[in-house]
Image 1 (cartoon, rainbow, N blue to C red):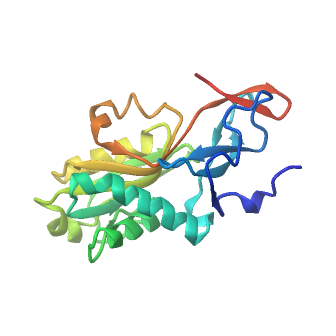
Image 2 (tube, one colour; image 1 turned 90 degrees about the horizontal axis):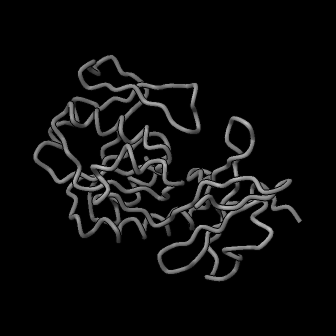
Length: 228
């Protein structure tokens, strides 16, 4: 029976609940695994193009609060060794995770980047950005100049929801470089496929995430398998 679309991202289940290598391939969902083996079922989304490639989707603001909290807990544990002083959140879906993680680290606040321009923003603190979920809807990313005193000289970690092609995060890193900031770590709830690895190669030893999901290829009607 197909999985109802609104039931994804609502529950983390025990290890082994779902098959991790079904002979017939994956159909509606893919079970991503947390570091402790527990699973989160993700919907399979067909990529634009010829319909032969797909990815596993995670939309944090559609997840249950319990799932968001579990992901934030795992991200916090992965970030602690880097001892960040400040957490920067990437809009849009990285923002709730950034707040959640910052609280768990004992911080009084996080710093949010923005894509909605305010009249006091500056051109020298702006960077164009696109993402896999909005390939034709490029945005401009801003850091509020009023926030710079909170970031200067601090150990900064950046949080986003998913690293996929790496294009959004490279835009974030270019923006922060304009402000003279080099993050000590980058955290995401999920690493989606391996396409992010090349553009973010210089940062590979500073990237952490509790979930990972593969690029998928079509093997039959409604059936998918990971691409090695």
